[in-house]
Length: 333
Figure (cartoon, rainbow, N blue to C red):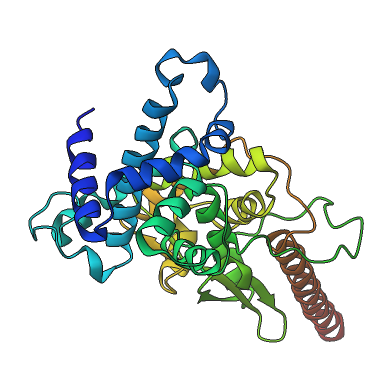
């Protein structure tokens, strides 16, 4: 309820800027009210939302707020009609409150149908469907991935690039793998390099380089990842779980945090390496079985192979040194 004042303010700014009467938006939303209702479970059991007009008003107010907030987040020039000291939509206020609101907007139970935003944009701008999808994809952190179901769906698609699957090559890929920590990999000459997105996760054997996207560790990391994981399990997306499994292997102690921080793969806002480990424990707790055809799982397999060969080489070298020492001792004796 405290946010209703800010939602009403966003509606006033939105309507003034678009120069389209509110009745036009309500009328257009009314045309798709059946589809919007079908997006929600058990809506027919809630007396408050039985009336279509009341339900449509909710869609309009929440939809405009989401649209306005994402517009400011993405630096939309059209939203500079807010006061600079505005606590939600002003530059400084937006920076301070961004994480808190985004955490709320990405909750599974708080999702608003994509159709609401696309309808609002079609009325305010009069653009074709392809242009609307392009704008919303960009706003929802998933360039060229629209349309989607809602913000969380689009955020997941942008995060994982809609699933970077690889062809299954061996059925034994999911056999017991050694849990290789970042510090252990570093000792075996494996380097780390930051890449821009999940679909670029890769282990380059020739240069012994593990490429990973960066992950921000702060007070919002745990609830955000747990929420994303819950949604991933619901819709059957495998990549996030596979990535979490990879993180679980890489970060086992505070010693594993520094090598990843130095390359910008971990951005630590909590102050200590131990705090990062605790966050990772929460994220990876109760994780489900990995999927062998996801890139993160393939990377684990490839690093295990590299590590195994390195260990074998080390063992052979140690054996040769031992044999040489024994031969020397026997000769001099």
